[in-house]
Length: 260
Image 1 (spheres, rainbow, N blue to C red):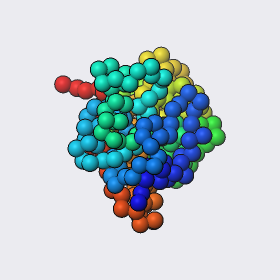
Image 2 (image 1 turned 180 degrees about the vertical axis):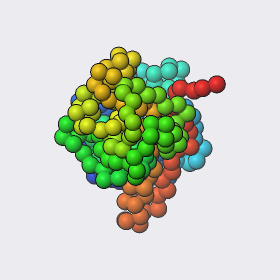
Image 3 (image 1 turned 60 degrees about the vertical axis):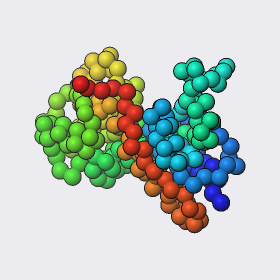
Image 4 (image 1 turned 90 degrees about the vertical axis):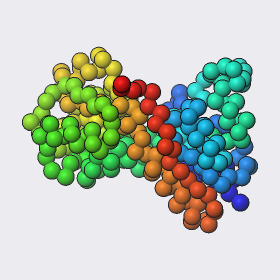
């Protein structure tokens, strides 16, 4: 019978927990490695809606990209916002596993999934920006065509641009999540465009002086493509040992921003 430990092992084989950032909190966060599982929900984040979705679909486990627990908790109570989700997961017998910066660093990983979603070809990595992926579009695009391509491929309700305005876009670097702190490294790659999830205001101001077209797609939308990759990886591992486990992509959009 498949257990929580099996899913943990398969995720570690792909994205070793020791490769995460020092400040991160990855691995099995809630539950027992010995518990049996039959259905697993995979989501970018864990919020109330995702937890209710998991319970409604009879999931025994949730695998997320962003960790539910980042800081120490002094109490685990239903009536306190900080620990309510932990309480609910335990109450519903749902284990929770997170693969965060270790999955960012993995190849293939978060950024490979983003590059694939954008249709980039000849994807590679560069030691100057080791987590990012660099590739080329199937054909050079005008800036308006590139903007439309980016919005369509990521299905993002908003995409913002800053920095220079090139005549055409062909070579692209992608880094899901928050990529403003490595814009200098991205500029050194000589790409036509740098795609990331979010940047700060002052980073946007710096983009012009760096001569870099920065495309901000929204944190959620830049990382969501990896969810189907996690499902496919885990389902393949389970099938290989003939374990009867079903892995599902969450249908809940956890992006905290909205437009009226």
